[in-house]
Length: 329
Image (cartoon, rainbow, N blue to C red; front, side, top):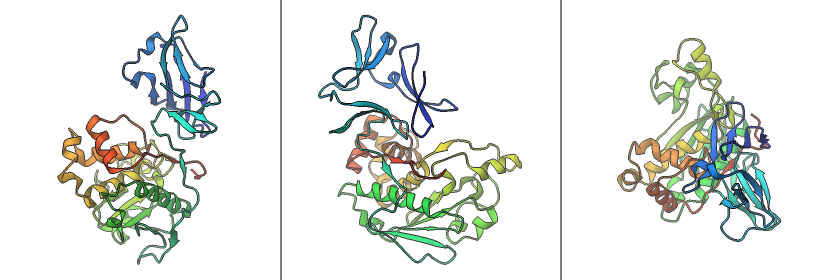
């Protein structure tokens, strides 16, 4: 049997192998399973159930416990839920999330209403919409094709990220930072936009504006509404169909790009590359760090290396995830 999440984008299933798995619906891409947990021999598990004390347990052939979600203090009133974003969770009515497959014990943050401290502002020349966070004073601007909902969603994500920075990394360092958002404009339209038109190269090469549709720097970043709570990027697929690109793009993204590009700027503003990043990552820290920040905020979840986890714990006070619930796809 497959138990479907409220978003209908994920499902939970118990496999014949003994593995309890969360996967994405349709393409059935693996998201989480007992096989990723250290020291758990899921192959001995014959059944999985919510026990009378409110714990999620995997039982062996003789009813012995092979694995349990909580090692202490379960709540008999807990219920098992598959969240809108695809996290398997034990939820107590009085104590909140006690265990989650993504490791995040805060309720997902909805982004479909304007957060406190965000106000309208005057857009720069060439842009038509603008909102500004109160602290730090980050401006988010969009083209006429960008929806108010997408700008509101980005404002919520950035407010949530900066609220969780530790005091050693003051948000005030980002005062007057700018975020520019587009939504499927043609290459010619992108080239004509202030700031964005100066990024990358012209035409349809692998590092063109039309292909990348985003980027970051010390003072500003560029993101695309096409990558907020959507599956596939229409313009990339159009370019592929027209022979202007080597591949299409049908991946699902929640807030992957929104978080990723800001992480690049966090790296730049706090000079992380000069200190911690090279010790935390073995490959290319320039891209591995933004991917780690994405995972910290559940977009998407993945496991952390030991040094990477220490780095992110030193940077942020807590983890969180942002829900696409209520965002029109």
